[in-house]
Length: 338
Ligand code: 0JX
Ligand code: SF4
Image 1 (spheres, protein in one colour):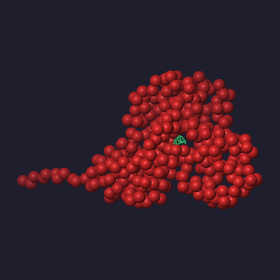
Image 2: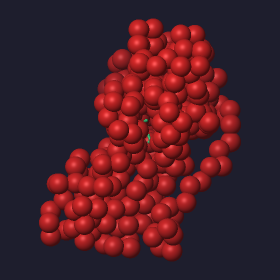
Image 3: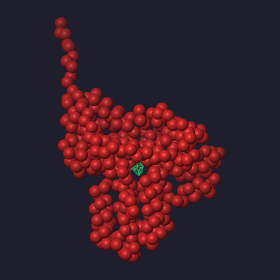
Image 4: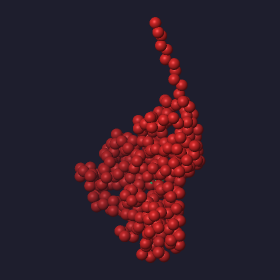
């Protein structure tokens, strides 16, 4: 008789470099809190215009609590007009709150304060008689929101260094720029340098437009990526800041880099033989998914997690006045924070 004894299969070793800061920024945390608190204060449904942040898991978690996502205000049924509608973290053109008022809607604005700051800088340029150059990605909701702070024709969008090379302003002596908050720090520096070279009188905003969270996440990836066989960025394909982290990882020397939304998406054949894995997460990606992905690797590799911390973040933004007295418990945010 042959007795077959299964030999324990030894897992291959894997070093995971886990970036910090990663994941939720203060603006995302605040935006999600606003929806959660609005549901507690006013009951379901709470309408949200556009994905509150660009992450399906967050959106679905809020839907399970009673949020209803729409792209435009006219999708809100007349019988629910007394229920709040929340504007997403990315900001909205001025026409949106105006439209909400005209429709007698009660709105709560979850625009990140750092996006609002960019809006103010754009308006300041205009007040000082400057034509505004917005550096950003066409069609992104933040770009639509920032352009929509000013009258049509008073903002020009520049996406690339090539755009900067050929841009012809009406008055080169009266220009001011702002940027989208989630751009590549390095690419944007190149675009700004080109614009300055061509238009020496171009005025910068009074404060940086690319936010602290974007900058810190890119810095951490730059530090961790060299020597990685694979670099995973937890985030969605429509998340600008997450996509930039994939580019940063590749430029900093990761052999491969990819956006991953859930552990179930991991293609183990494609991942193949790796010894060093970098992990970061975009500003809209919940920590529970980072944990899920680490666990998926632990089940196949003898993984050691090393932290690659390049900054500490202490930013915290208050929610809207109307919601400050509504208690927020740890359990309320457990669906994203674990
Ligand atoms: O596409 P973005 O990176 O602007 O948005 P996302 O992924 O929802 O991140 C959080 C919101 C950022 C606003 O600046
Ligand atoms: Fe605000 Fe920056 Fe977060 Fe955008 S990425 S929500 S600007 S802190």
